Amino acid sequence: MSTPDTGAGRAPAATAAAPPPRIVYLHGFRSSPQSFKARLLGERMQALGVAGCWHCPALPASPREAVAGVLAQFAPGPRDTLIGSSLGGFYATWIAERTGCRAVLLNPAVRPASGLAAWVGEHPLYHGGGSFRFEAAYLDELRAMETAITLPQRYFLVAATGDELLDWREMVAHYPGARHRVIQGSDHGLSDFADYQDEVLAFAGIDPRIPS
Image (tube, rainbow, N blue to C red):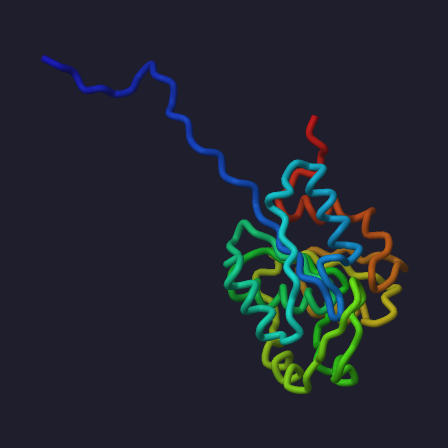
């Protein structure tokens, strides 16, 4: 008579390791994937051996098209993290509220429609030459995207008191209960971001230690 095979004495079957979480960087107004912080983070991910988890798309001028493109291309999930700078932080918040992903906000715009009303028209890009046109209709798209956060543990706010364009106090008030890193001084572009990039990556689930 045969006996049931209980698996006793055998090594457990190997399970496939979960892939590292993805990071999607969303640049700000008039910016691009060539921005200082995007390049810094991309190089850091390369050094950590996880460059394949790093994504930094070029965003169109239309806010509606920008968030739709991120949703279509990446379909962010709970293990993924969006890192949004300035206007990109506004987009990251809107997407996180609809997908459940995590979001890091770097000097984020909270209500950008009011601040960008004066920027309707053609403007040069910060990197690589060229220009883009910001339409008046985009202000209505931004107003329609204004949203409060839920589940604040999904958010990490990095705000500089020296931001010359946006008020860090409005940022802190907009993300109650979230993790906050308020930097004394600095500037809107976070020129000292190298001091904080590993803290950002750790929040996103990336071990910031260089592999041996």
